[in-house]
Image (cartoon, rainbow, N blue to C red; front, side, top):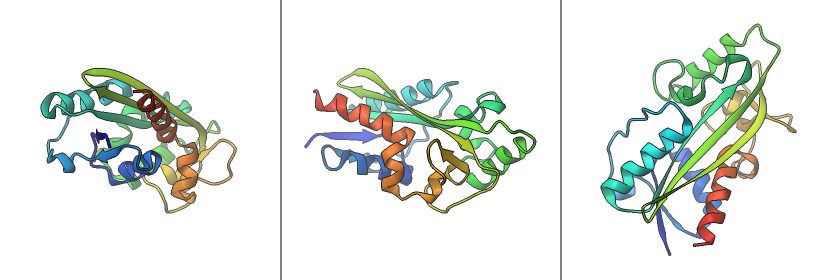
Length: 192
């Protein structure tokens, strides 16, 4: 079985992607290859940040790998939080503070349109390939649900009356931005 490193230590992301791969390819984390480096996401776009991660791992460890960058884009906030989604309120990964800031910034707006976007950069045998996924939705005025992570409790995808945080992992994986991008990645890998 071929191995592929996912340039992340985010357990939620690993779980989502591993479920989509369903044993087709052995997915390894950064921990699995003993990489404990803090890979700086210095890009200004999801594509740049994904590429930084995948190239860092490929160049240092010489293994096929992919990195992703994802975020929430809100129309009325001119695309914010965007590439700063994980650290929108300051501290990296403070989901409660990030959601609170979004809700505060949107308190007086009726335009609740938003989308989650994922860009994957795969470096396979030295060649880079990109895969993108988006899911459209709206931002709720209050948190709902306890599953998922990040902004899931305030994001309601189009066509649903529940948030990502109210869905099971299987339900979310059927429609999420990351799932769409991973499906494109899987289709590409099948053709190798």
